[in-house]
Image (cartoon, rainbow, N blue to C red; front, top):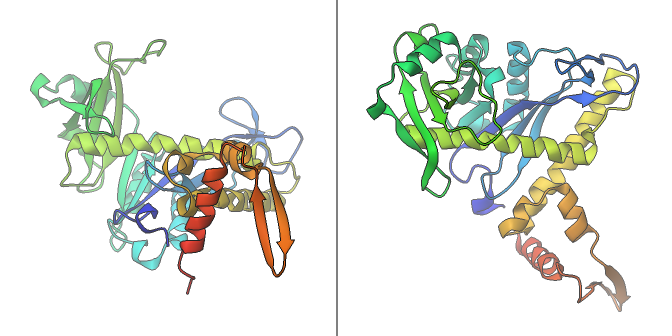
Length: 329
């Protein structure tokens, strides 16, 4: 129904996995001290990315205690299992599904599970800069660095990418590629001990072949949109989990995901342009609070919108697009 706006319009489904800390203000079941020295829960979410022109929808939510590890492979595997169960059958195995977590997903157990025989999923996983990776980066010759690119195809100023090889790949799944990016730090950025020559280093692993490393780095960089999905989740009920029992809070977590589905699919089907990327707060302000009057005349019901409302054209065009959709089934 969504046509070219569908998440798999490009022949691939991209799934971002990310954790979020939810504070608790009372003694709740499984609430515990978090790694940020706060108190609450540490859910793990998975979102299907709708591409740079859209938002994203939740497909899995795993409620965990506040002291759950960020890089616990068993939790990432369980979240991935829940994701695959939600996807159409043709995307449950094979390279048409890309799993894209941040560096906490860069564990041996998780990557071994993704690439297990009979599963063969694609991945683009952030990696921690270890001493071995740092030493390998220092040995990369200058001609091996390729300029990073922006979404529009132009060169990204002050950023370069290169692919690592050799001993740093030992012990990882067969076919893994390790790509590193160095970039001039933005003003105020604090460098770490693993950064080199005043450049900020980031690294990720993938098993995708046949694409330039600059394009692969851009694809992985786009996983930052998961933070937008987390922010939208907070706007739809994830700011706290107020119930006492874990089972009750798990139900609330499911309700939050249902609430997120509405501002994900409605813009995909009904809106165009920048409006497709509006988050819940902006949707409430610009669309859901539009002044209107429901008028019944004869055997028809008409929705009359105020002419002076600045987004009236967005609402009317959305109704027209929804009316033009084919009947499901």
